[in-house]
Image (cartoon, rainbow, N blue to C red):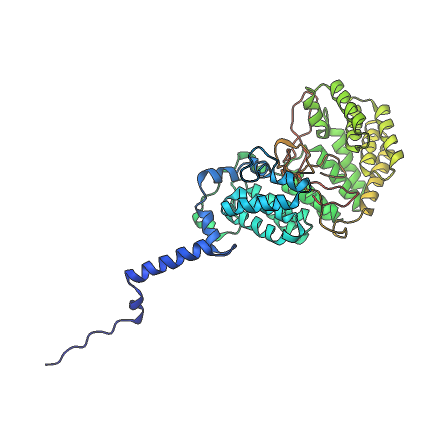
Length: 454
């Protein structure tokens, strides 16, 4: 009798068994918990971010919360960022590392440790690796991306910072994931506020970065794009005029600058904070600024605020006296020349106004480019504290003056911008005389005289 041989089984069937399945799961579990940063393990960790962490990542309060994080066991003590700013670098690094060991997949912890490490030369690379992980963990969060972009700019890693800012500028209103196929498929979009479709902070900070790098044409185009959304932002339109003039397009720049000054109704956004502080009473605001000047006579921003308040109240001779005194002390103060141009525009003297704008543009053009200045910027989003939003650091440091658009940033101080501070994030409308309107300060600013990056 012929016995029919059993059909040969394909070799792959030897690997299909429940024992093999268990083994594979075990191997994957071990790898998942030990895989180095940047691999699938951390990406998958982002898929299971809890709802509370997702909500935090979608709020501008995130940057301020990160800057306020304290060393483990010291909830009432100074923040880790404060320790760093006080020069207690080792204490700050140790505290950040302790937090990281406790919860290596917590978004705020990654950002806090990354921010601290990135500001210390010996640990800079580790810091940016942590910040990249934070982006992987919350790819839809504009605040996480903004924090990363600001720290890159602060460290003068411009080739990396500029693309990050460009990605941020392109982030749409519903918070679409940024080139992250895993998150795109599995992770639902984080909640994003309705006003995000008019979010101009990344563009304004990028424009300031271009100015610092003496790429004035790119700065002007970036500002134009932002002003398509935020057309009533007088301070940024003045900055556009400056960028065009610095790009040797003086007539076009002056037209933009003049338009910004002529269209202003009420008080400029640069003095919004002091006006709000004093109940929108110009007399009290002026007295307050002069009191602060008496205590800090070298603080030029306060003197510029005094001049702006005087201009808004049509006290042109007094404003001009303040600015002339500033220029007597420092004839190369580009901001003083710009505000003096505003005086002449209001006095219907376009020739003198144009001459002041031209001089300011020359000074900006002749300052040292941020790219050629030595060493990373020491200004942090936190130290740039511009009080943009008083709520968080979009916080990073908006620019108070036209020549030095100071985010945050974000933060802006890290918070500010630029960091740790209360900066206003988006640039909206100029403050009106009756208190309406919102601030147009943006985060992450730089000083055109020193070439510091945002």
